[in-house]
Image (cartoon, rainbow, N blue to C red; front, side, top):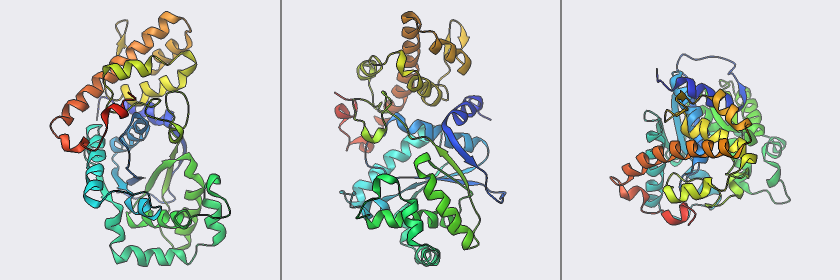
Length: 321
């Protein structure tokens, strides 16, 4: 058992907004998480990684699915297969360096190249009504011309659960509607119903959702000492939730920190954040900087051994310069 298991339990409790156990338990538990790699990774992934690591230490098998199929359906994949493979390898590298070294990584198009995937999808589609489709689509996409890709997303996500053998799925709270419809479809087809673990959407340094942020307001895995100091220097006591999340997900599961000779725990951190004095806040930011830069320097040192993984990244832009 990892010495950081306690820290991962803290992260799990902090991150998860909805947890529903499966209707039937299997001896071999598999949790899947799907994403669509396109941009350089940032610390907004840390709540996801910490949550997956929690399940890893509970004995789960982790499957991470790179959703290239979905990007192609929405015409967002503007690079060739070789270039995209390198992007996925970069994501895989970071996930592994962050404690998910035994995870299985799957390219979604490898599944859709299998005829079994489409036969299974067709069977599930027989029970998919247009009402189900509409109800599962996030509100911002409900207009007079719903893209076909959005309409198919719920259906394919349902199929992914069964195809990849998931006993649990991890997603964001905004996907709650999709998973309710998915589980209803699985039930109609006599498939096992997975557990659903949903976490809140990650925010940038100033509390904005990441999809509305820029490289100047989010922390990259590629920050150097100057860019990290500059970004953390923009925080103030009103950003306590962001600071708490960074400690819980990005520092404590990786680096042992101490303050005044005592281990930094969530209780100690909360006491510090409740103290509104400038001196205490400066100490908190210093602790945060030291914890982050130690971790990031280790990660970026390893990139020097495999420079091809980041050859497509404009590092100055990722750092907000």
